[in-house]
Image (cartoon, rainbow, N blue to C red):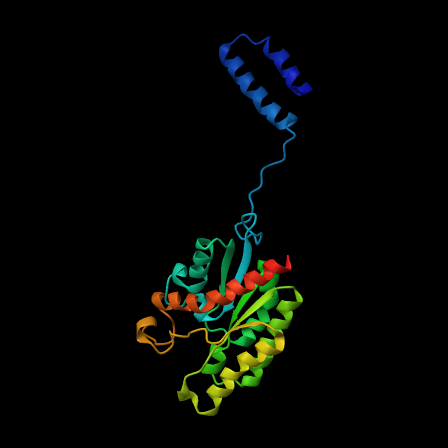
Length: 244
């Protein structure tokens, strides 16, 4: 007990009145806590911490537009959440972060990819972007340049990339849909990354698997998207394990 406390104890012995004794006792406790405690105050971690939770877990970040974000469905119905559930069920300890932004073009993805990497520190990035470029008729050369740069930045950090291929409907003309769809395999080959030939295979154009807008997958559609994505994720995980 510190010196200040001892002085107060000696003073208390001279106090006869019970009420005074109680008051003095409370005063001692307060003074001891203030003068003698060496413990630092407790601090709570930030709820926005980017530290990877759970030792042993690795991170996959799903980067993309509304098709990744899960426009029109609950967060746990979008493909990133379903993918994480599937991986954990099969014994793969990965968290899957949904980093989709509705309405984003490949230029938007390019502008934020460094922030995604530094904030979330992924082991794998699933890159799904470009659908909004196509719907807006943006020059496919811009899309190709953006995809290549996003992948370059990501690979420079030692992160594996899975590129999700995209296609445009034929009502956008004869040449544009063909030029658009050819961008993805060309970039994937040049950069040496895994390519999902068509992210919406078995979903696009089928009313059973889309919302009323005919563009965005419904919950059943996202189940099929996971089936499209899953083999490429497993192969990439296997490659990461072989490098360790």
